[in-house]
Image (cartoon, rainbow, N blue to C red; front, side, top):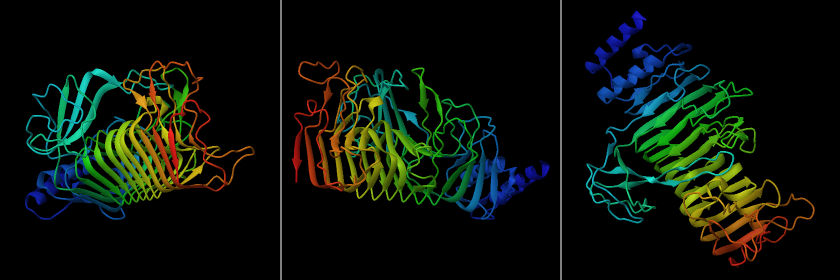
Length: 504
């Protein structure tokens, strides 16, 4: 221990003298033998680098072991992990929520005063800011996303995030979605303009052996800064047994703007079961990447190590309260937006058995993508199967994992209050869609545009407690089936009786 402390002192002295233009973990006592706990040295190295504004460089070929400690290595400068490996041991932890690394902004978040109300589409929040910020608005008097089903809950306060410049002008690409009769909190997260780059690294998590319940682990890289690029990283998982607690994500992006994750490899976690809020068994969601309260988050040329069609592993990605999410050139088991996304794009990608799951606003565009799932789009029924805007699919392939398969699936749970009006996209367009349904059961009459949606007898005289909005128009252009069967409207003819279907 004394030797490592002396190394810390010497390293600090060398830094002060300007002896090198980057920081290494070894200068602060890291061994890199895969056995010695190097967490303290890694934390110290980043602290010193942040103080001098110097990048950090890991040693190629070394393996840094990260033990049970709760200390977080704060990243504020560029990092090159190179071909170094990091072994993260989650079997015994002091704090399961503490990330290994946190990428932090240069400025601190602050409360914005003087804004009493906000209106949908408002162009300016009416106050000046020190610079561009990602603003989080909240009205604690209104509850949204009152979840239904096995993981039911009482919802969350109405909130959203949007970009604002120094004059208070709202970025038109992130418009205000809700009306706020009373703004109970308005938080500004300053946007760093200079990009920060974290690249390389081979990370392996030794999975936790905790009880299978909702105690989400957060041991990874937590991004809390805008304008970040994460490149050429790989994350593997080992040591999963017949039980374990779920993960919130190895790479998590929270309250940040303009974050790109590219050419990275991730690993889906095993699916475990627990008892949900309704007192019944339920599968637990576990993620390797996630995004929360962030805008302009892109995943480019990324894939997963586990089979995207293997249902033993949970879907890779989940998000809440995000805007402008992008998959480009990705091969993942699913896309998922739980508590809403405003605008999403998937292109040049391949999605596995979990498919596309979302609720939200704006335009959901899917291009040049293959979806292997029961449905092409799945509107999450636990949050009201609701989308305010359009679904657009262009030049895609849909491979139904089971017949008959639907282009749009959901459920009109019209007896439950989700905290907002629910309904389907106003308009749905599929332009150039190949439905690969050559393998189908007997008595198969073709795929459907819509699944039944309602389990009730939706017929003349039925009155909905919470009315559900149905799509107005569906456009099918150059849509073909391998089976030669027609694309049918829905088994629930009454519910979709007024939908205009345009076929070309």
